[in-house]
Image 1 (cartoon, one colour):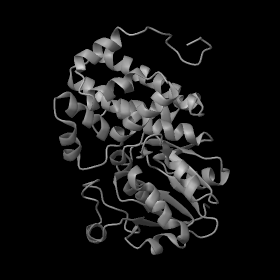
Image 2 (tube, rainbow, N blue to C red; image 1 turned 90 degrees about the vertical axis):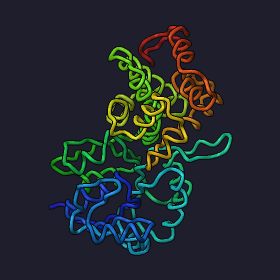
Image 3 (cartoon, rainbow, N blue to C red; image 1 turned 180 degrees about the vertical axis):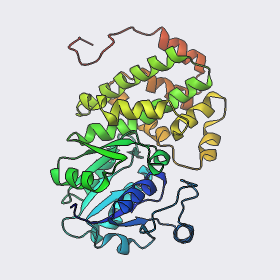
Image 4 (cartoon, helix red, strand yellow; image 1 turned 30 degrees about the horizontal axis):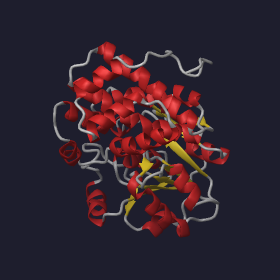
Length: 343
């Protein structure tokens, strides 16, 4: 019989709520922590996250709190499901509260906003702020709404710690939720962050009437671009052939359930970026990730034509038609990366 543990999920957005619901439904003592006390009271009373997952009841045993000490002090496993801009702050808050041996996992798909030269992943924040704690990252093609609908879903836990991998697999697995393992935490995390850029691109393309040929080309070249970037940063490009890479890329780039895809679609229809982000009402990590990735690619001289093109459209007022023309008439190179070609 599987051992029951105490788990805390920090962050009451769509994904945090969804995995907290799974874990509570699996019989573990589960806390969902949210900073806003009014939101906590609403969820406690109505047992539904009407902002992010309307129409889906929360498991009765799920404990919802704004008290971080209550959520963390006796917890065996902590998931941090906080947007990248607040991730470090929350990590610092939990540091003195963690009990010895507690495990910490990031589910955030983004890069910490920073000044020139900064490029910090969430796993790197955990390493900096919690150096003695065993940690990992969770990422994959996981729309929260389909998780709570109990659609069959797969995800990836990546860690150098076998204890983290085993604990997360045991805690999250269910008849409809499967957890695969990977030791390349950096690759899994980069895949989750980078694909948001290309979801914006694919959303724009759809709004502009792109056909299936175009979308297939964009998806495939996006994958090549992601792998090229990740390899230079030290990740394993083969990671991008798995669920966290091509799986999440396909999901996010082909569905209007994706926040970043919706951002791109609205941009493609001519809506200004500031208005699009304001209307969304949720964090679209791809916009910040684009800034960070474009800067890093320039610094390391990494060829990323799609990301560079999107940056030109969003932040340099370049015309979409001009950018598309330059992409199609640019240098023609080998199809498949990492096959020994001199690229």
